[in-house]
Length: 313
Image 1 (cartoon, rainbow, N blue to C red):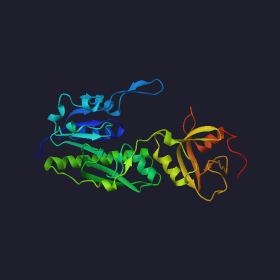
Image 2 (image 1 turned 90 degrees about the horizontal axis):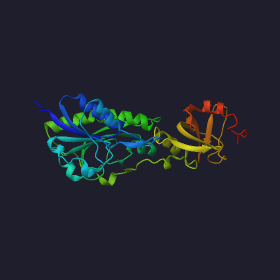
Image 3 (image 1 turned 45 degrees about the vertical axis):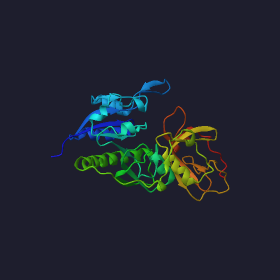
Image 4 (image 1 turned 45 degrees about the horizontal axis):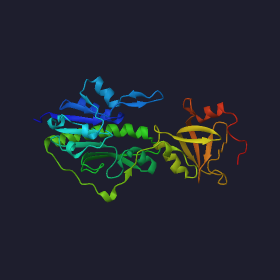
């Protein structure tokens, strides 16, 4: 009979909550400790906001730790009494001392097919790059950044209308399933996994609000991918005809006037908002202006009668 596995968990955002919930739902795992990022100021009032994992852990009366620095993660050596530490989007690199403390070490749920897209934003970078597939990797952690041995991988396709939000939700569920299977294998017979090929590695840098500004001199395909990759955060934004707007949904339109300059608004009707790129046009379907709710392009144009020029270019 397989004995119960004593586990600890480290994670911070919503994706980690999906993983943590699956662990709690499995009676064969004894969850002793939950580690998450400290509460941080957020919003206009800069009030302290707790992480999604902390909120969930409090609801389930779990023991919570919120170290400020990696060196403070486990001062009382709690991890020495667990079999494995599960890490999912924790947001803090673990020192080698911590990685070696649990009996079976630490394993990470990473939302890419490593070694592709190591780093902080693998979901967004995969969409932005135009990858046709991605997946999750369950990895034995080492002191590098997502460089440990691969224990399990699960693939999934990236659809043409995929946003970072929709892909995030699918990968969270896929990661939870893959984790449970991996933990079962670890209980029955520990394995070392597959060494990553560093020559095939790519880096998924953290997303910044600055890079979410749309450069209309780029191709329509690259702009359309960026809009999907940065939805729901930080959301692609631009200024058209003097109005700042965030763009949540758009599509490529071919056959437009190639003499129009990038960034020109090309409207064919009072319900269609199209903008010229380097090669083709982008039709904006959903947007938001400062201080207002998200609306369709038709709703926006209805409230901004003089937004589009009568010059059809």
